[in-house]
Amino acid sequence: MTTSTLLVLGGARSGKSRFAQMRAEAEDGALVYVATGQAFDTEMAERIDRHRADRGPRWRTVEAPLALAEAIAAEARPGQVVLVDCLTLWASNLMLGGHDIEAETERLAGAIRSARGPLILVSNEVGLGIVPENALARRFRDVAGRINQAVAGVVAEAVFVAAGLPLRLKG
Amino acid sequence: MTTSTLLVLGGARSGKSRFAQMRAEAEDGALVYVATGQAFDTEMAERIDRHRADRGPRWRTVEAPLALAEAIAAEARPGQVVLVDCLTLWASNLMLGGHDIEAETERLAGAIRSARGPLILVSNEVGLGIVPENALARRFRDVAGRINQAVAGVVAEAVFVAAGLPLRLKG
Amino acid sequence: MTTSTLLVLGGARSGKSRFAQMRAEAEDGALVYVATGQAFDTEMAERIDRHRADRGPRWRTVEAPLALAEAIAAEARPGQVVLVDCLTLWASNLMLGGHDIEAETERLAGAIRSARGPLILVSNEVGLGIVPENALARRFRDVAGRINQAVAGVVAEAVFVAAGLPLRLKG
Image 1: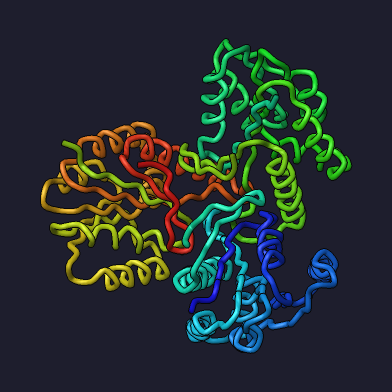
Image 2 (image 1 turned 90 degrees about the horizontal axis):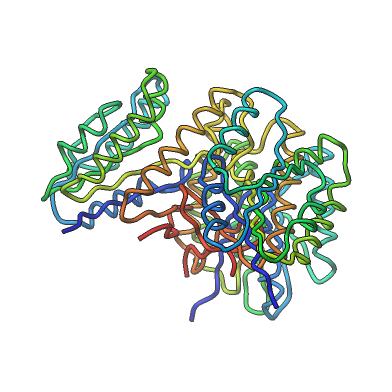
């Protein structure tokens, strides 16, 4: 008995969240949006509000800026579809909070492997530009890339989205 | 009766323009190059001149830094192949001029849908690096990504080019 | 009689080197790692040491920060697998040293065409972010992109790796 798990990887404004939402809405069951973003400023708060409005009333939202493995363990069960958006903001929250990122990534991978219902995870690819001059940005790029690799290794299916269109990486 | 429309998406120096030109030159008919770039400095002027020389004498060049929907309406007709290079510079021109980007994007999408001859559009993917520190750069990234999604939604065919080689996104 | 040549293109922390190593280790024969990186600072020195330890004792390492065509000519022969990691650092070394990059790229392409044993080349895609503000970074982006196109043109096989997973570009 296998459960569908999907990683949706893409750039900023690539349509990856919309693609993930359409995939979730095509499944049967209740819809749970696991939000990792935190509004630190007005730009971010506006973006979060706009995304929530875009999703519409079919979606229940759960906030999990840090406790993502726990949220997946609690929500990914038969009869509902869980969408995590996104792993890159979660990585950023872990870094800012000084958490053990390797250990948290392993816990996330374990939670994905143990998911008992359909699970879709959205993540940013951030390593395809010029090496950042800022050392923190370079470290973030490393962290985000390692999380993407770890998650790609345990999901059943993975796509790379550009301009709203998917390229199949796996599954 | 359908007309071939193709979006060629890729990074800087990915070979996307050359790929698009080869595709255009493989079709029958006159060749029209719709240039959206404007030379604001020497670096840009040199690049424009080099590209024009690379294309050779088979091509007629039309400049459309802003009035892109109009240029497509006028040129995309039976018997000639139109290549627009590129949507990202057009987006930049719209932003610098304070135009209504959403409205212009809809007009562009309409012009693509109404094209009466083969049309190839080149665009940059710019959202796969670290979040820019500069707010204007972040806004530009959003604008460029939305235009790419809108155009990808109306063309018959789309490819992502890396190192001169295409990955098929659509069609 | 053809020899297998593979370009592995990807972003920072995309898993491209690991993918390339697994491909090399799946072949019969001795394993030769052609390293182009030079340790200019502690961050880089640590990364080089970590990568060498990760590869393990099956690999022999050859350093070729500049003389890459020569290293390929010497090592790419029947009975051993050569992995070049990576072309982007080689490009950076050429730029810093003021070398004729176009001529060196042609010599590299010639060496790849003449390889007498399996050859795998790793390279970064760096052109998918926002245009860098720094002119040197813009020039580097151009140089790296042109090298990727030239190499992609002569190898038998090319893949784009994201999150450790390959998309087939060629072959």
